[in-house]
Image (cartoon, rainbow, N blue to C red; front, side, top):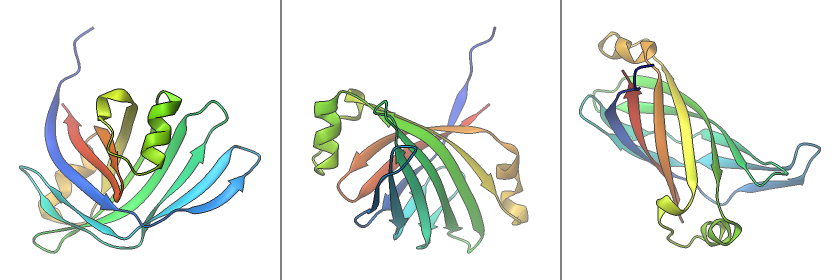
Length: 152
């Protein structure tokens, strides 16, 4: 089977205020993160993340944080792109505890991967409707940062 090849698409940084914690539910610990804004930049597109998106987080009983995110990107030329992604973050408990306290942690110490998909009506960005992508993540005190890659 051939190896999967990727191409860097953009880096996106999200600003996330304190989480809403719903507590333990029948599925695990449910938290909701509101996206206050952010920015993205890469070789084919750049712009800002508009306020109003969110992440419906589920800390599963096996220790895996499951992400379910929806947000709106506005390009530098005022075009709108809807981005959605799902993914997982997990690692050794001491590393996760440090992340949860807002400490800077080397991303190589934990697993943080997501699978973004896009939707737009902008003709100049129509190509993004037709791609699959993957991203590596890192968590900072103010929110996550992802390096997004188009799967070729």
